Image 1 (spheres, rainbow, N blue to C red):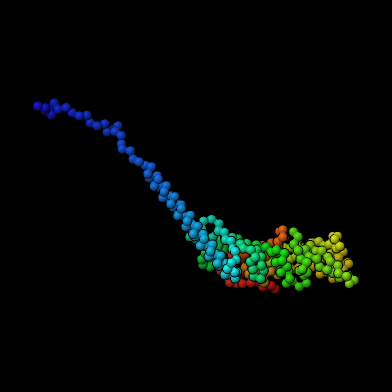
Image 2: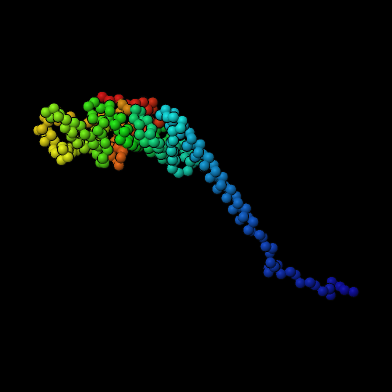
Length: 270
């Protein structure tokens, strides 16, 4: 008979050195990675959709405001992610460009870069610049409205605009080559004589006056063109230069033009 005192005992388990069951962690990493990838894909999909919608809305708005044809090609670029800017209520930088656009009564290739453009309300954008490029024929159209300008002889020869008017000397027509430097002055386009040629040789203004008298003033004067009457009042001509085969005009754009009808209407000339 075995008693409690004589019954053999089993050693207790070594709990301290017992090996804990291994947990498989990698499935959690895989699941997290899948969720992350799906979130990224969803973000980019939503961003692409938002960008397309905003681009279409801006394009339609530009066509409506400028009375452009439905097939007018307009490029819209929005810097940065669209969704955060929609939430914030404004676009940090917006670039709109199109070729052969009628700006008021002028036509040319237009690019506008606007900053802090509000999406809703009557807030103003912080500022914008516009660039209008006129080719030779488009510049001739503009200058044809200036009385006495020999528009048929106008040409672009960087950095100048050139013309070749004819002056009468003893009943004979004498062509005078004139190089005109373009500039902006108080919002007007100004063409100032820079050099003169007579018979293929460069001559001074004094020489032309001596030979042709008072009629020489027709080629020696500054040609001033008021631009305000052809464009919205919110645009001011700030600079102009001949670049290659185009006259490039830079405009400052008032921030309130996005909501102020008075700035959207054409300006006036005094």
